[in-house]
Length: 190
Image (cartoon, rainbow, N blue to C red; front, side):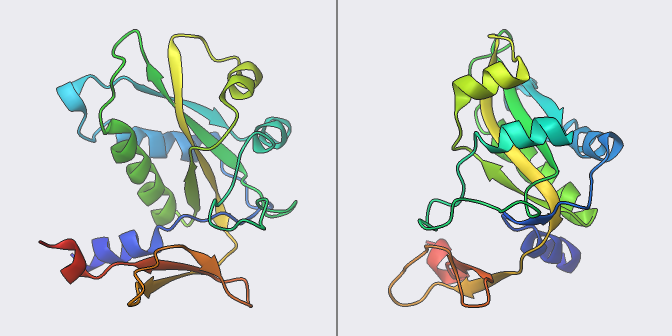
């Protein structure tokens, strides 16, 4: 259990990356392959994935994303710190309009695979969907669920205990380390 706990702790929402560290098609496909073995509501397996890891597409896709809502003064990673790959998670609505919680299951699985491979990522749900559909030429039968931004993490993420104020907002300190408050186990169990 300790190995799994350490992997989960290490798998954070990373938003800054080393752009010099590319992610190959084969590595992206290996993370998608993990999702084939995850549970799926009604075993529908309606989620599909669009892989983006070419510099020109990455630049256009990046411009459509919004980053870190709690960090109001931060507009996202700077040049040199941007994701080197994206996995666009889609739902094939010709199979089912409802994917229940499958998107969370597969996205966490992809991020755990990335973490184990020395990479990391962030699930992004705030972006311009119409422009994303046009840029990537996504057919109408696919609903864009969210995007997983990926790369070699360039930031330190520190897990803190939620204090007596119960403030769960993440923040950055003077050394630009990203702090994420987590509730205690006793707070979670009723």
